[in-house]
Image: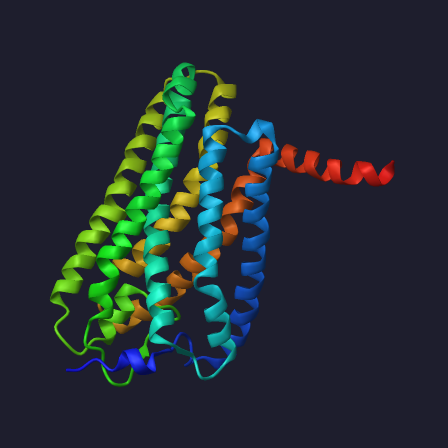
Length: 312
């Protein structure tokens, strides 16, 4: 079957069966996007300006914030247009760019969260050697590896997905161009693409999640050996924010990419996908800010520096 989709693009159905819900979601997504831009930009700014936030943890956190900014910007503007406009169209090129960016940044975040778990493991289990193990050069290399793996994954998986023979109706049963939705749109044999997605899910989702669980297992064993309540609280404060972010991110991603093939699961997957694309980037800066005294103090000092000149 010839693929004429390149000339006419796609229709992103999203939640078109629920027009009232779309108007509510438009407001929710818009507010979440504005909070995402503000919160993540603020974390990057604080990491650059505040000397006390130039540790490895905040270096990785600023990488995560920059990633979330790019991630949401790659899909949310188009999502807002589709939620408001009944046409809900996207060009083939626009879909290709969105798919490539979505895959690359999503993969990078999976790897980056595993790297951050390693950083927390060293901080709790090897505190005396933390500065020598997690030195700036290693941080830059680990961050670069995460970004490169994301780029490679997108380069490998995007072309075979876009070359599928898509059905003439061009209706993507999702609100963004993602691999599972485009595979479902195909009217041809998708065995290779499904195997590729399954293998990628193992290496990009299961392996990093396994490393995170191993890291926190070691952290839990180390903490259980501590008799000091103060040390317990310090260890919990060190890891709790990252653990919450990991739980929110991986639960939504697994629900999208490892869902069973039935209509109920696909409909539920849309809501998980929406939370994955909009909710987690919005909540990440709130989680790290509200549960982190250093960030709150840095924010207070930053606001104080802005107010003092006016008082003088």
